[in-house]
Amino acid sequence: MTSGDCPLCALDAAEALWANDQCFVISAEIMGVGTICRVIWREHVQEMSELDAAAQGAFMSVVFGVEAVLRALARPTKMNVASLGNLVPHLHWHVIPRYRDDAYFPDAIWAPARRKALARPVEDAVLRIALEAGLRG
Ligand SMILES: [Zn+2]
Image (cartoon, rainbow, N blue to C red):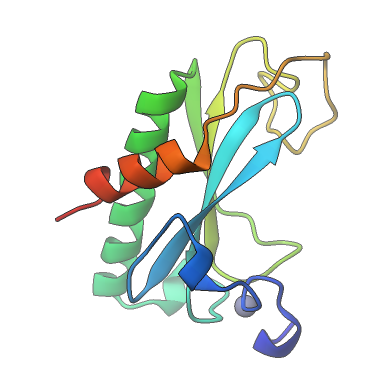
């Protein structure tokens, strides 16, 4: 996969919930879980080890900032932070609130569902304001 056929390269960072010069944050709804965030590196890079140390640190500081914001809003049992990229090999992190009674717990959200569960959505407008406040400075 190159930047030409990459779905993350095709996203418009101007429509993100939050963005800086290096990365941006979008939300997604996972059935039986709720709202998750994805933190996406702007440049089409496959692995964290391709970034220099300063860029790695800056990126992870955004990822951990998003984790703190989403944890405060979603009040989960546990937060999951994961970078896989097997299907879409463009550097991005998933930030996922988890609940003891969500559809997949205690497995990863990519596992087969264990039960039916209600999702716990967080409104994009609420997330946008909290990210702006939480990721400042
Ligand atoms: Zn890409």
